[in-house]
Image (cartoon, rainbow, N blue to C red):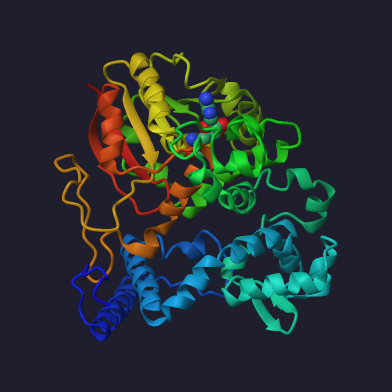
Length: 480
Ligand SMILES: C[S@@+](CC[C@H](N)C(=O)[O-])C[C@H]1O[C@@H](n2cnc3c(N)ncnc32)[C@H](O)[C@@H]1O
């Protein structure tokens, strides 16, 4: 058809399919070579997840090859599948999110772990949550069809590698005895599934209404969003979390932030910034630090640093349990301080070596980010550094206007015919972008947009650390 974009070189269809499959084949060969040289194995889809079994994927060259395979394979699927069918598949993807949410809420993963490798009949699985087995079977079958769980024989389900990540590690009895503390002392990825398949997905159902509403459409306010329509509230999400009846959601969200570490190399915060070069007792202020999951990783790896984790008062209270459980003594020793602080008020810490803002800028529209950054600039000493950790969004096309000249700002270009932003493998930050819009009128930004906000508030960008993963890119600023 003549009115389709002639983008990406517009080669003939079969040549494009061959180019994509060559990317896949070359990447598999590269994985094979890397693993042979390090004597490691690629994890089977039928083994449970563990830190050790993810070792292969943690090798940068394997990670890069996996990224190319994911993008090329997804592009290949969309090239060969009927386009009308693709729209139906994408339009009904919410059923997959809903099914995942049900499986997590019904503690299916914990039941199956306790049942062992042969799995369990759906009647037994459903008993633990007292839900209808025939309906649960359909939910699990949709998931198994999408490679989450395995249907071993009709109506009998067992774990695979992906479904094993839905396991909190707690016993079914412990969860049923205290459902409200299901996520406490877990790695947080199941809490993350709960967050995205509950308040986030439900808000997403009202995105059209929010974007076409005359008042909400161009709003920068955090309480004029799809979430406000979905949950019939006038409160911004943070205050809504603090309402009676929402305690479990607030606590789950805090633990879900700990879980975001699992979506990237778990120690991603350690990379791209010279933490070890900071002086003994240098103060890192984790602004809007949640329960302090990033500071926790830093404290566990850099014992010479001090941390002030700031957040809203109820979150700071949740944080005490987290620190006492994971790093006993840190609070008592004074190495770590938890502080209730509103980042729209003047910053009380004036001797910070680092102001860390992780997953904060993306929560807020430009108007509010400028306030946050100005308060930090006002409290900065000459040698204070601002470390913004967020996703950096790329256009889905080539971008001649991108930032140049700052160390780390240049991006490598993927082989054609992959999209310049790498396509599907980089999709999570784009999901996050829409999620920020639904929940808060926030957004993920390009490096150029981030740099502009920092410069308008007296911060010069001096270094960038790129990452395709969600919330793992770093932008480092110094006082101008
Ligand atoms: C997306 S979470 C990020 C948490 C943490 N930085 C991390 O990456 O794990 C955003 C945090 O900002 C906090 N927050 C929201 N409004 C705030 C405010 N006005 N002052 C301080 N913290 C706030 C929320 O309670 C939440 O913990």
